[in-house]
Length: 292
Ligand code: PEP
Ligand code: MG
Image 1: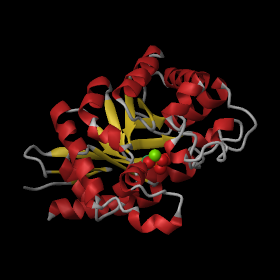
Image 2: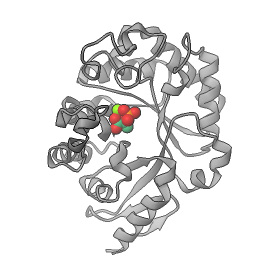
Image 3: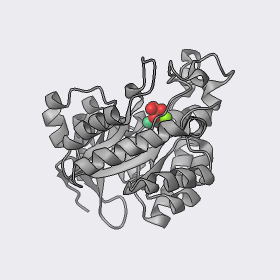
Image 4: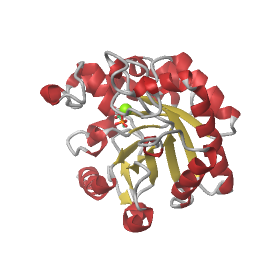
């Protein structure tokens, strides 16, 4: 059957029913959005706003207002479109100067330690401030944007439930989690039952599946998301996507890899989120493939 590229998205007919795959941007929050007009216009929105940048290199946490101002700026750059914002993913490869648990020396195995949502449970007020800032930024846009909020480093259904309950209490409309641990991928079905959406982080998923530190160049040869072990886990998540009908994207580097992206779409993922510099090439390569 035929498939057409339209705007940022690509319509794929790898399933019996033709479906649209959204092409989204990974942002770090430090981009000059005004200079990104064309890339923004070509995208379906943001698939991952990493919020760590607001917290790095400072002596204390940013205030609710400071955060809300930044989130509002990003939301306003994508009117009518989806913007997925990830709550703070500190710890491990993303240490924070003002949090002693994340200073890099505090834990023998920081990648397996208190990072992501685990840190949010130790410093719960940090997460509360961030959720309050997200809700405030969303209110300021009067619903003119499709805001989705997700938490990193989920390993259990209970963590997903905990986060979803908290975020919904702030009135946030779409609440999801990252699937980037093998445990979360294996329990994707149960996790999707308690959230509105998920996003597969292939960078960490590959690190944890292959037991190879993403910060250690001596094992970088093992860090290939195309490894069948990683792809099989993603296929399991894809099965859960089909069962639940909930949106699940990929926001790790693999989403922008032309060898891997078509397989991800085939497995059932509903969006691909990539660095701004990779968006055009990804759209062209997917459009060519679906045309063939
Ligand atoms: C990932 O782990 O794939 C991901 C998208 O998050 P980060 O690279 O920020 O850990
Ligand atoms: Mg990650």
